[in-house]
Image 1: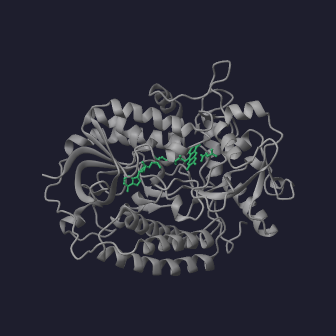
Image 2 (image 1 turned 45 degrees about the horizontal axis):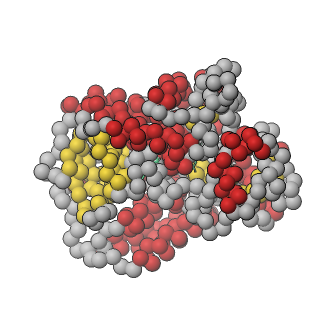
Image 3 (image 1 turned 135 degrees about the vertical axis):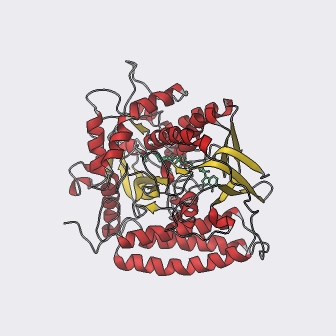
Length: 521
Ligand code: FAD
Ligand code: SIN
């Protein structure tokens, strides 16, 4: 008898994990593990909103086209059509679960515009849409008798044949998932959690960079676990940098200034107060994110500046505060009255477009392991995600994965004979400084050589430096009692390695992957 046996095991309590849980709970016992407080997730911090086709003159075709243009030739068109075609239905379901979005005085939803969108189509709850979605979903999950949420439980490894003593590699046909080894962060004990079906919904990896909008949970654990289990990982070279995070040196994570603020009319200026976006793209401030982030990066580098400005001084004050109260108050709290002074902003790592490769039903290359949300790669985003498409992708794929998993569950048995975690030969953790220093080194390598602008030489240097960190960390891992910090560091190094490897393999500049050695024709 294992510590825990469930039908559906979910890693992560963001929009992907909870919306899936709400659907599969009618078909079996659901356990959701989450490594921090139950609401801590990238989802909680989403500002701009969720893209969906609601009213004319918008149409599915226009949203599909915008997504394809933004993805720079790398989207899977079938997936784009499928996700956008299901957008209205999934949004109505989310509203049915209690999520509230702002409306105009006429009673229609107050749709906003963001970069790359040809129409207003972003549903939002002021500027804290993610907080509202997370609140509504968790409230539903708490009411369901079949859903158990265990917070401060850290999933360390997915269990496959490898743990039963069978040697597997990426060519092994039929790698199967039987559950996870999880570290209970309250007891510090490692438990076996056996499950018929596992959903990875572990979110992104922003913390491999020095500057990120992501909360500290975003350490790429799901991608690293699946990579180690020999699952397929794709498109990791496409890391999205958000153009406008508040410039506050030393602050980690960085506070986001939503793209919707530019959609509302805010203008980018250099430190002399001169507009520059027209030099880079006819869509100016509302060009896709890769273009705006590169333009800002170029302005900062050529002028030797540490930031650029976002000018909101000309905007309607009452309307701005109504739509963006958190941004307004956050800026005030650091002595920026945005109606009288411009906001200093810089790009920051924001979103992982690639991830665990999945099919139309969210199935990974490992049997009985599904992946949904930011940790997955569905083909929707291609080389660059269209703003506010990720919450939508998570909802649509959680639904599709749930439908598929519920059809399979009765034909799957729990695996017997999973051995306890092998901690032989390990001793108490060494000084924490070894972990914190290695993390800083990783973040410096990724930021300096694998950021917005790359080159073959920078990528090679990053690869060589990372191998040293990898060796040191694996050796620490082999002789030390595991801790969450050490596991996260190991995962972040693994994710950095995959990003660099896939970036080196791409011999062109496309979307978010911009390599000076392969200029665009
Ligand atoms: P998350 O919401 O990140 O949830 C991941 C969960 O997994 C967390 O609960 C975490 O604790 C848990 N977890 C991770 N590893 C482990 C482990 N080893 N063991 C146990 N638990 C684990 N997208 C939009 O579409 N519109 C927006 O307006 C928008 N704004 C954004 C603003 C900010 C500041 C940020 C950071 C992102 C924004 N995004 C936005 C992106 C979007 O929020 C995320 O892509 C999306 O919420 C991801 O949802 P998820 O469920 O996949 O992952
Ligand atoms: C934002 O509000 O600018 C973030 C939107 C997104 O990441 O999709």
